[in-house]
Length: 431
Ligand code: GUN
Ligand code: ZN
Image 1 (cartoon, rainbow, N blue to C red):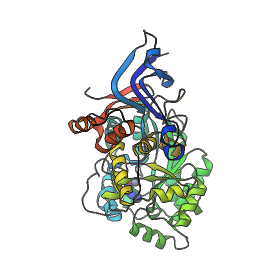
Image 2: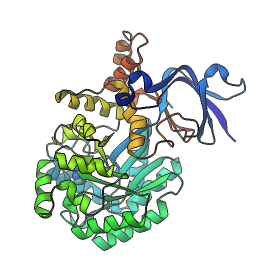
Image 3: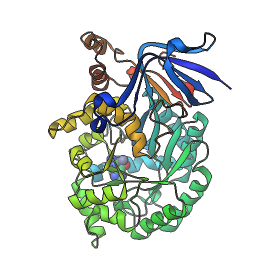
Image 4: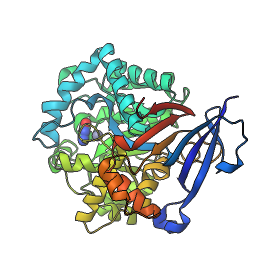
């Protein structure tokens, strides 16, 4: 039994500030201690209550929070970030589909996975919903590294059987068989969870989407992730390929892909009818602001989706997205919403990055809070990490919401002091 404490200023969310009101949405302990035991949070409380012989990691004035969660990211695209001058379909063909072919090589996949996890942890992200490539070996490399680190990850093999280079396509039968083998090996093994991952309707035949639906029925508890209504040309292609469909959302709906474990990326251009179906099925839409701006896809309408009862998560979408940092992502989310006369208060943003995204992924109780009994995935953030942040923080006199707003607006990986995964400190700034 390994017991230790992590001390500093503790912050966790107990409810959505947009529903409960800001003052009823969080728990804050100024001089707090999290006691960690066997990878779980054993208790939280004032640091003064700690037994004198307890080993302690001290973080002074830094904020100690649940690990950040990213609801949509592509690990094979770490070298696609910052690819110039294209909107979605051209961007995929010109950059992404070229890079993803390299993942046929298991050594390449393994080194990309190592880079990816290093980058997530230095950004304070401890859980993500991750796309691999069409190659089963890319999934093996990913889960092998995740298992080594003991991170809680959701990931899956991309399924695509048309409108992509031959080297990146499977077929309905093979895609399903390879996915089934990966599900049996990895879903629920340690902290690993599987997502059936048809890339998007454009690159799957009806037979493949049918097979994806069958996989979900045969393996209850696995996730489904795909892209939806990101770009106008993409939507036109889907309308042409699935001429019988009522809408883009209807394509996924007809094949049984929507539901409480479905995470669809983007959802920028949706009709009221589509929003109603996403809500009825309990599907989550991942809002990917840096990607939506960078690929020029459009402005996500968070208020409309939330009023429609749709669960919304926040995500980086690297490499369409331009940063691994959930803080940078929240900053861009704020700006996207500003352009639509909407807001994103800092408490709401931090709720979203922690408890909110955990709820969106159906992982409440396991991650996203500091509740005793939950997994000890913890990030330590410093709102004075850079010279400009420290300078700005001189005007913040004990106002938590303002401090958090500085952190999300100016922060990036430099704001991460430490990241813990299942109680182990896997990242520590300066080491
Ligand atoms: N739609 C289908 N594939 C992708 C992808 O890799 N990134 C983004 N942003 N959109 C997609
Ligand atoms: Zn994506």
